[in-house]
Length: 135
Image (cartoon, rainbow, N blue to C red; front, side, top):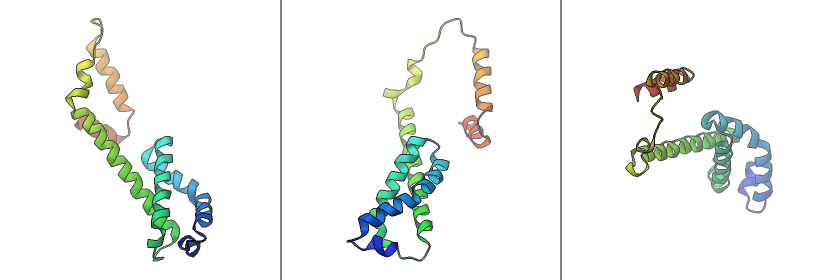
């Protein structure tokens, strides 16, 4: 399969076969990392684009799936970093500071809100709970 992918004449046909063969496995691997169906589809699509562009660089030192898996993992991590950067920029940008736009009725009890918030935090996985509490 690798030789067919690296051969210009057979590349498109071989690539379609590769996508059919590995798309679902890579999707579920990526989905475990990025959590969202839409985001996982985007990352898998970017993964296959990168594979298509770089198949000539595959040296065969490892199995093809190992190479695909590594590209998918790197694309997932890159996606998460970009997403985190966008979130941080939005929080740090005073023009988008949502805290200034919040309003609440005068009859809301702060203690009840605090209890609801704590219950929501308690539903988070341990690492997220720790990060949230530290922030």
